[in-house]
Length: 331
Picture 1 (cartoon, rainbow, N blue to C red):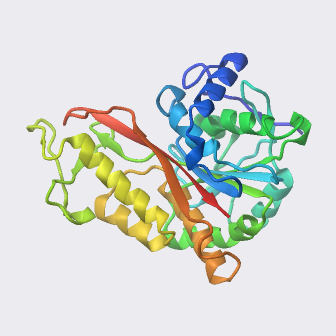
Picture 2 (picture 1 turned 90 degrees about the horizontal axis):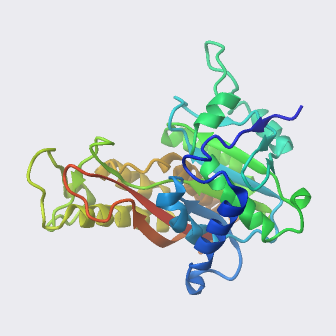
């Protein structure tokens, strides 16, 4: 039976007009500096998932690097913003709609993953965990679909030949659970025909997110900052937006080391509100596992970030800001 997830955030988070959307994506992709991009082999990316007016141009820097030439399946890992998930969940749909056209899901791979018992359909009370309605409420997966469709249309001759998706919604997982999921997914990452797209925005700062962490100029360690008090005088040494960028760059540096614990440590020390920290954690744990097993060279699987932007450039103590980054990993 065909079950299509509607593109529920079209009209509000991005245009629902196919030709207009296609033109926007082409324009953003054309503005990327290709000198910073790998010639081939980038099978994993990190890209943002906000409304396209905010993060659409930044996401292009990840998708421009993506190498789909050998792709047979595309894993899309996004954080759960609304469902309380202790683990991960798989979609019950067979297709995801976009204003550009529908994308098929890899139901065969999804069934294999469900057979592991790590992706339950129901909670302990018998309630469905990731229904079609819940799928359509979540935006972290949907906001990548138009870009995926666009890149596939640039690579494959027709929609019938597009590789299918394996969307995975990642909940508030512990480190041990992230390593469990990495064990299941690592063989796919080792497969040169698999693509991994990690959905994440970075720092969510300000009253809208109840996060006010600030790094003063004399703070030499990530954990040497403190939380600002709303209503107090806005600090200037450095300005808040520079503090946010410094903290995000520390987080990006930790990811670029390829060491899972380095990323966990920076999040613990700063509390940086990286909404996709758990999908990122699963990916980094996969890379570490493949290295330990001798299935991945030390130089492979390391994220390289190519773009950093924020929704608001200059931030006062009463403002809010969200950061957007794009990066790729060659495998």
